[in-house]
Length: 262
Image (cartoon, rainbow, N blue to C red; front, side, top):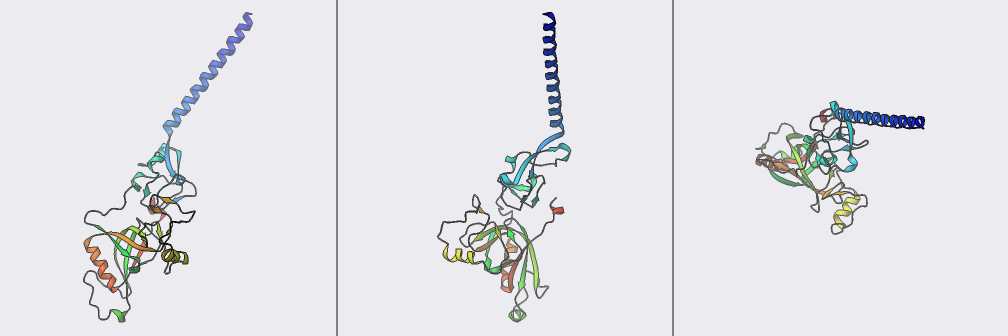
C-alpha cells in the first residue's frame, strides 16, 4: 500500500513539475515574443494601394514583425488605416506609415481656392486620380492662329509647341452628372458605353454589379468625366485662364518610382 502511494505521489509530482516547466517555457516564449515582435500593418500580398484610393480590409493585413524591423510611425492596428487614403503608392509587403495617410478632402490651403475646369479645355496625358501631383502645360495653337496674338502677359512663351506652366494637385475629378469619380484615363474619345451613359443614362439609378462604392467615392466612372478641379492661387488661376486662349491645357501625373515611394 505504501509502495502504491509513493508511486502515485511521484506521478503527481512529475505531472506538476512537467506542467510547471511547460507553463514556464510558454511564459518565457510569450515574453520573448512580446519583447522581440510586435504587430504592424502591411499591404496584403497581391495588393497595391494607389494614391487617394480608400483603404479596405482586403488591402491590408496585421502581422507580427521583429521590433527592429518596424519603421517609426508605422500603423499598429487595422482600425488606424481602414477607410483612410494614402498620399502615395504603397506596394505589397510595405508597412503603412501614418504620416503617409490622410483623412483630408484636399481642401484649399492658405491663399488658395478650389477651381474646376471643363474637360473640353483640358487634355489628360496620363491616367489621373484625385490627389495626384500633376504638371500643367499649355499646348499652343498653330502659328497661323496665333500670329495676331500678343505675347502672354501672365506666363512666358519659350516654345512654339508647348510650355510647362506649373505643378499642382488634382483636387477633384467629376463626371458630367457632377458626381466624383475615381480615375480619368487619357482617352481622346469616350468609349461607347460612356457616351451612352452621358446621353441616355443621366436619369437612371442603375450601376454595374461589380462597381464598388466607398461613400460617394466611385472606383469606375459611369458617365463621361467632365470637370477637373485644382486648388490654385489667384495668380495660377489667372495664368490658366490666359493660357486657354493660346491653346489646350495638358495635365500629366508626376510619376513616383518604388525607390522614391519608400
